[in-house]
Amino acid sequence: MIRYAGIRSAIDGSIARIIPKATVKKYEDLMVKARMNAGAMTYLISAYEYALGGAILIVLVALLSYFFAHAYWVMISSAAFLIYAIAIYYLFTLPEIRVKEIKHGVEYVMPDALAIAYSLSLSGVSADSMIRELAGIKELGEFAKESQRVNSFMFAMGYDFLSALERSEKVSASPDFSRFVSGIRLSILLNSDLTAFLRDRLEYYRRIQENRSKLSLDSLGLAAESYVAVAIAFPILLYLTGSIISIRNSSVLFFAISMLLLVSTAIVIGYFTEKIRGEV
Image (cartoon, rainbow, N blue to C red; front, side, top):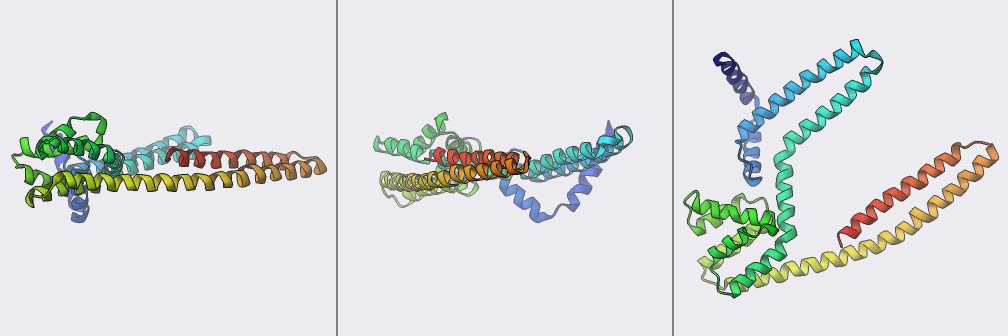
């Protein structure tokens, strides 16, 4: 066991020396914003070890398939490499993916969170109590978790409320949440009206939602026109043309191609239409 630990430490040390400091710094920032507890260097060393182990495994799979399943070794090797590539890509981009998820989650519920905060402020609730109330509302998702981080800075790390807000502003993955806590902190420091700040931010996000809804409706109208032209008229023309050519040449090739184009076009246009409709 001691010998294994020594070998593992030597491998970890060798990997740590080849990782650029800029990469470590980048992952430190990402992992703090992503609320991942592992250290950046530990995470990167593990990722490199998995990448190296996976590469060795891919070579073994390729060799075994070549000798024992020669007829399928190219297919097996390609599939194994594809799985390996996807896994490694996901492993190295996981912190960034998590940051984007937090950013999108906070942005999605921001108007609702501001509406609740504004109502609490109108009721005379203090700023620190407001943050605690927001952190306890699970329906706010990532916004509640970001608010809980402010509480963690205060109660677990000993920050005062203003320092906790400042720290949260710097480490939050969401620019919207950073502006939210920054506005609260400045309102307290400048002794300004916090309720007015929350009202202004709420109106701002409402205007953004209205503009997005209008843009989505316009996009949906364009998609509908495109759908009629591309997904109905053009495929039907291809279908008729392919059918006529197939009949004249006594071949089903052109008919099959036209049918494939018709179905493929309908699926693609239908997918984007549903996607736009979901944003309305």
